[in-house]
Image (cartoon, rainbow, N blue to C red; front, top):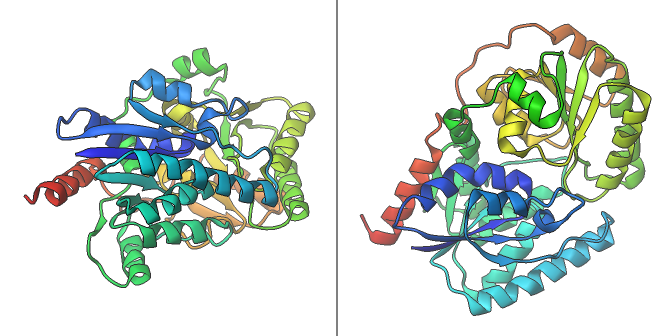
Amino acid sequence: MKIAVLTSSRADYGIYLPLLRAMEADPFFDMRLIVFGSHLSEAFGRSIDLIEKDGFTIGHRIDVMPANDSPGEISSAIGRTTQAFSRIWEESRYDLVLALGDRFEMFAAVVSGVPFNVRFGHIHGGETTLGAIDDAFRHSITLMSSIHFACAEAYKERIIQIRGDGNLVFNTGALGIDLLASLELPGKDEFRDRFGVDLNQPTILSTLHPETVSYEKNSLLAEAFKEALMLLPDFQLVITMPNADTFGMVIREKLQQLTQLRKGVYLFENLGSIGYLSCMKYSSMLIGNTSSGFYDASYFPKWVINLGDRQKGRIRTPNIIDLEFNPVSIAETARRIAGLPVPEFEPVYGKGDAAAKMIKILKNEFTGH
């Protein structure tokens, strides 16, 4: 089976990893990656180097990053990405192309393939993030794809609602849980040696992405976030920088200011999957608005203070506390839950066998047994 995998950011690559490794080890699959988006950007950590280090075959590299995070430049980048991919779909033929998630450049790659009758498989469809423009892209990819791998039963049902039928719609669980279940995460000493952060100290892991609002509103949200972290001097802060989203630069500027205002702030473009998950394992909690707080944090589990509207619509588990961007409320809640046990709850996103389920489905679909 000739299969291509679309990867446009460090985030989706980390999620894909268990499936990529399973397909790489199975002679049934002739797999190659199509690498684009922030992977090729020096400013975002040039994560294509990690892909090459991992040894996966890269079929195509497309450098179409937006020059900045303005709506006009994001819109132009969608057009350039669509145009670049039209040449790939014209020259290359695949039995299936896998797309993950909801980013604008992933949408552009998929919509470009529709006139060429490219067959797409979509991972992480059916989800809702009311505070981000990603919903429009995610649901569009769902409608343009023919095979669907949802990470929870509720999301499978939403895909069926969107499409109007349940043909080739599966709840496989989340690949991120596979990764966590299979990894032997490095200890605190190894993390310190590699990243220069001593996780023996009380640590907050944080990521803040823009909401689908104006530059001015995101500036206010980022300022409130910065003020909240200033009120937590007893914790060191490990912060991963936001994706290449509209209005993301204002958040980066506020985080850079934070490093000048207090000690114990560590900013990273890319910790890598193992580094990021290791930090999560040993952190006291997560604060921010990343989807990782819903999937990965449910595995350990870890307390998550989820801020604002970006993740509205996702499944809530008992470890998640939703707050507005109020600095005092955020800081008070963080101090209150520090050291408290996380409530127990049943796994929502599978038991770590999503990749095996996807492999079985693909073999059944493409061999008839």
